[in-house]
Image (tube, rainbow, N blue to C red; front, side):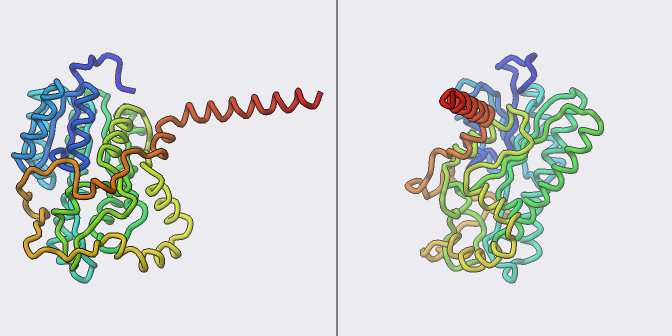
Length: 337
């Protein structure tokens, strides 16, 4: 848990990519839980709306426009947030960018940019957080990952590779912090598919509009998991049965999953609707507009995950199972007398 010395009014979290999608839902989840929130994203209009949502919940906000691919800009954003809100206790790396395209249709610049935002953006965030947390010997860094950090899928090679890289970087750093006896906690949250604007504004080089691979969860499910991971010392949190199934399936039968994805990996990510000629793309520049946490799949959202609930309450569940087993054993012995 967080250090007892912090009062609720002093708790500061930074959420990168916090102006839309899962990041926006996470901003509001922390504000509801009593945190002051620093928000880093590119579009100033959406940043202002996210900050207003925090203030409407009675907390302070500091919204900074910065590209997570720019290490100097991330460092300057962290300086400003600490100057306005106070010491950063939790840093959530949620910024990402993807391209829906087969590898044969990608350009080197597209791969580079997706990597800079999704992988190097997390690295820049982690390093900025560590520069402030190590001297204080406290803090938590949350790397927002995906089931695709373990099991890659077609049409998103650059994004999947970046998520794999984040996991490797975090694992390496975790061992270094243990070696140095630095009490900064690293946790990674591996997510399933969520209904976010990503599927409306990501660069799409296919002929059909993309969709999250069903089942589709509301972004608030991810935000709940991120808030939990930030306030409990879990090494990693797998969110939802689809993520668990994808991760374990890739570990146990990778060749079989390769063939399965060759058959359904395209249709699962693409709708029947053709791509509009004027479809926006946010890879190299933000797309203007009042985008929020949700995308266009609200009617198909799942607003709860029982697998996440079970993971968050695993100690109580284990205790209940042990207690039930003891009661059953005692009852069995009595019946034998």
